[in-house]
Image (cartoon, rainbow, N blue to C red; front, side, top):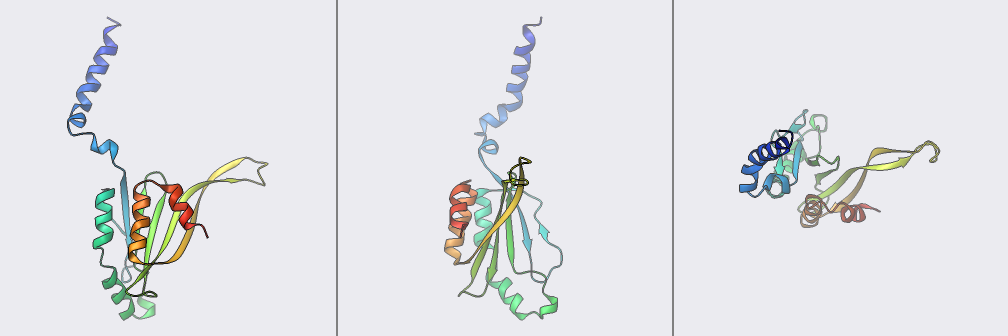
Length: 167
């Protein structure tokens, strides 16, 4: 009887994952992203309840009303402005890429804020290392280049993105 248990567990596991196998396991293959949005006229940051896959995230970026949000920002009094228009794309790995629109470049440009965990030495390395999030930012990207960097992030090519973001 003891020999049958592994088979039963394996068969039970097989039955549990069979629907995933039949659908191509897309849920296992795809990376998913949480999205937050900062609006110029809203004090609260908007958090989207649904996780998006990479394709959906890219569509979200392409269709986000960047110019409308910048027009709204420019029409507001300074004391009524809460944020520059920005969207943060967060992966469950602890990495995120925030894209903030500005009107310094025509029609508009972006600054990118890449937040990722890095190992840092504590007390010159005498106390070991710890993981700490650090943000690096770069400014002056046009929409096409910003989209390319977002695609790099969505593809999980973090080292490539880090090279672009280093001054």
